[in-house]
Length: 463
Ligand SMILES: [Zn+2]
Image (cartoon, rainbow, N blue to C red; front, side, top):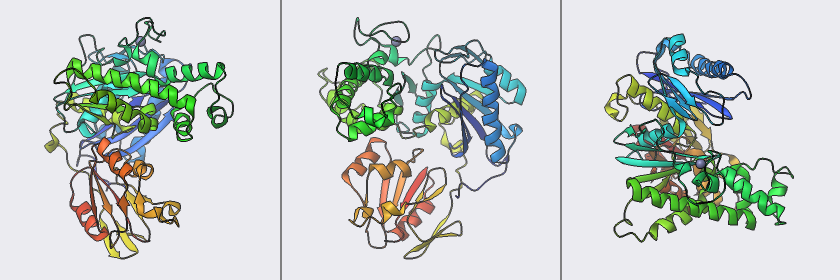
């Protein structure tokens, strides 16, 4: 495994971005350019005191620093994303609906303990900031993101600044009312977007269908235990053509499409970015429905522009947004990219057909070069399919190659253009604003080495 060439502390500014989630705590070490140098994920302890959650956050932060040979003193600042309302000025959590962190002065505690500035923000707001900085909305002056998972959240960014609201509560798109008198929402109101189209709402509607006698492959996929229906199970059921799951998901996608219309009419952002677990897993069903609803907008003049894209950064959006916020807190503007020293990607050399080297290490088969500088061998089961599929690249493979959201993907097609993208693959890249250059492998390697952008590559080395 090769990653970015390590640089000494002081050579580049490094930050920690921490995403405190209900199930996982993710701490990532990130350069000022947005290059992710390391990440650590641990489970969030349940039913414990806030202090114990802080202790786990410290463990995650210390581990990722230690792995990189750094200390807290090497950090410029830390950004922390909280699933709730925060008071950034006081470094305090105000309320976390699904976690017990309310009232905790987490920013003040950590900044005192590690003598490092700490910035606090809402997780969905920071996810939006991450996409605006380096993801699908990087070219847009204004954007709104909508994240569909257990709940629904969002964020609005204009000219590199989050719109946080008068009470730090802006972007709560999950609680716009979309059905008067509709189902009760976790927030206490009824008919919220979240109560109609979140994974929690989808699970509720699926269970109601099953209780009414509908058959579904979910029973088989989840081996009879339907207490939690994760996005991956929804995706599997859709792929199997399950009619109940398809119906419920179509309805949720229609509601999402209408929420996008509302966003367009209300703030008219250049781009709307859709993300979160449900969208990540089911975009194949969701996107065409959302696009149809937007294309049918009847309000004069509202139809053109205002693209809907998918999240390019995935899981990294929130930690990158947290780092963007931390940068701002110490008086630096991450959106002015001349600040950032480019990460040092590994150098690739074409030796001959069937052999390349990455940082002197030889590879005699196809490889992926990921956006965080790591090298992964392309699975021989993909590369060696007898029916010729090894020469076609589709969304399943692109999902792996483009993890972390590169700006550009270089495809080395072999010595004589053996490899190509299929239509779904091209759509995958278009929907995430990932540029693509397909060239014979020696030329693709050359272009990859020269590019100073956030980049990834798929290199066809041998048949
Ligand atoms: Zn609500």
